[in-house]
Length: 192
Image (cartoon, rainbow, N blue to C red; front, side, top):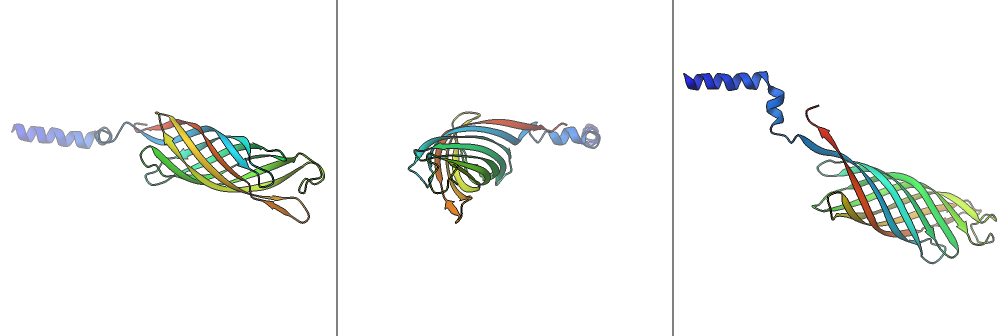
């Protein structure tokens, strides 16, 4: 009789309180998305001049999935050289795959680029000392989690500039960057 009463009580609990019973097997909170901000020292080769120093800053919104995590990323890069200074501002798609503490990624960005020349007479300067282009860039890198929300980043970008010149002038600058990033984790409460 006792066995029947216990079985009936367990069955009524399973029927009457299904949400609470099923929630016990899953974590109360799980990482679903995150926001990342970063700053990096960049070694920029502007394809018009010798390599120079620069800085890259930006941020990303990432959705985490089991195999790959896509991000929408925005970044600003400034590089300084003897003959030209370059800056780009834009955004694009980045996809990463976490392997323990490492997060290798690939990205594709579209930016607005401005190039300022030291001399107005330089080819590509339009006689004004500056020029602009839509900049397409692709690249990748790896993030290494060294603390709870902090990571180190190594990043490489290859760009394509098509300056407004007649005939057209195409440049292919490159940037190798190292820096630090901070992740803000966004959680979803499973009881809502």
